[in-house]
Length: 328
Image (cartoon, rainbow, N blue to C red; front, top):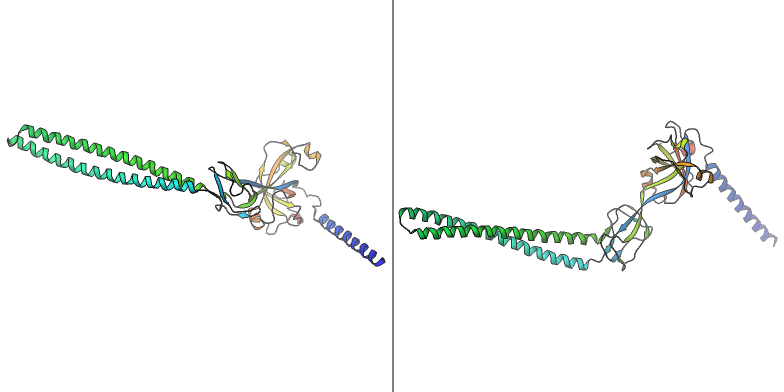
């Protein structure tokens, strides 16, 4: 009995010691007061969200990625049922083929009309010569003149038929191209490389034009928003060097840059941790992690992770040891 009780006490003591050790480690990792020339603010890692949506209405036939999957830009992630559209496309292609044949036939008619005009011209010239010599009557010349006029009129009609046939062909080809583009639109492609955040539809559902199938998180476009008072924000320069330390990765300062400084002060939103900060006019600042770091650690960085962003107020201010990044 005493041995069992002693064992429980020992386990409890070990848990207390372990908790204390972890707390002490985190305590050592905290910045022991920022040196001059630096400022910091609390925030959360945010990421740009992009929806994969339909351009046309249709029934969702396929939807491959699951929530949490990584997809590459340009990859086909979903397909709409396109059977009816493909049938319409085949019909339009057949009509376009008929229109091409009509153009060929009308052009052949123009060639024949040109031959008729040339022949009528030679006949008329010969008749004019024979009339001058008195070998044929004037009525014969008039008949040949009428034949020449008829040949010219036939030529004009043949050219008009070519114009009509070519216009019909252009319309048929445009119809084919339009339907082909619509068929292509049934394949939904990822506009960015990222992770699937939400799967908003399932195969078999009918989506309206603009209906959303997936929401992607752009892992290459993450940032942290912090708020600084006027006296500090006015010293923060765009594209100046910064650091981000996430609560989940306390020993890994992330290289970053300041990519936005608000031009106007505002009251900070309610999610800012301290009441005193919420009651002040502050400037919104965005700090963007180094894209190379994000690419190398995209399985670690996730939207919503809390942390602290550190910015330089003085370009020459050195980073303390706990914010040093290898190679920087």
